[in-house]
Image (cartoon, rainbow, N blue to C red; front, side, top):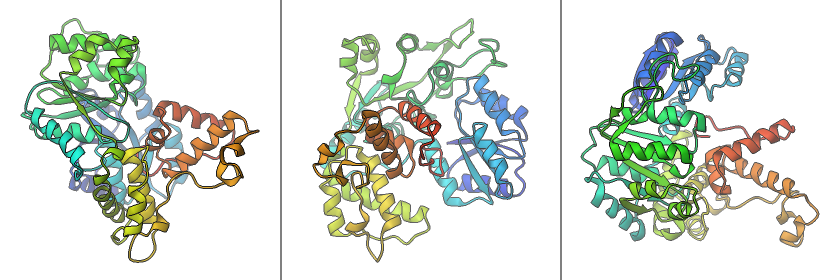
Length: 443
């Protein structure tokens, strides 16, 4: 992944840069926002901006919004001025990274920005068959449509295909179609010329050009507006794109991978997705099985996450007890690998003794004064409550159980991240306590 640092590399920010490099990030640097913007326009592979509090963080965020550049900004500074950190968040910074830097916190931020949450871990024969099919087509130039429930690891499989492809020396560029506002998505894909819209101060390269010679992943493509689907179809057919405001097409050499958690063919038949685009993307189809369909992966993934979060939190690694593993393997895992990851993270923090015991494995919503489990009759205990109140309690409790991670909570709830954020914004405005995001940009 690529990170742009805005500010001097002397002192603590330079130390943060060195830690990021050690964690595999590629860095660029600008002394101020005026120097940073040309770099952001020219390189759509930049995944993250770390901006020193000595800079005007709000001005950086506003400039990116004006120019339709969807790159998250993390403010960095010492804890001596907490008000400055609060102002940076209020101005639009995604998170605040305290300095001197903590290596594990930087690792979490980089991991969340890159989108590569875990390695491809396969034990179950059902998942092994899916991986074999992926490797069989990896060296081709065919477009691949990867389908599966949210949280199954579709992007992880896409990255595996790229690593096994003939394009491995080229860039892997991922674009989450569901996470980027509709008015920014077209510019993110195709780029724009100076003057293409109000705020377009200079040419900006889009994801297609950034992925030249490599692979472009269109994550959750089912969320793309139908109008934009038409432009994408032309790009795939003609192997060329038009920047917004451009007067000449740009030739592209990019392999397309796409993911979806919906039945795209059914959507196409109902007019929600272009059928011609579906067939263009679906040269090869790959289905990633749910975690329920590959129970043989649960133990290996659980151990992986136990090691990972012990390291992240500075705790000793503790194996998962047989009783705890039995409970994990019998759970339905509606949220798939993401839900399992959150469960093990929580268990690592709650466990006592030399093993992660069954008492540390919390599954399902806890009993509270406002849930059906705290009242006799189960569902009957909900009678008399307003539907919006039940929905609110479920959403807030799920966000709490996922340690504030909005993306994972949306997956478990079966709603879009955009819908979840709008709900939480409404609850905050109503004065309801809403769990804050974790110390990463994953939410």
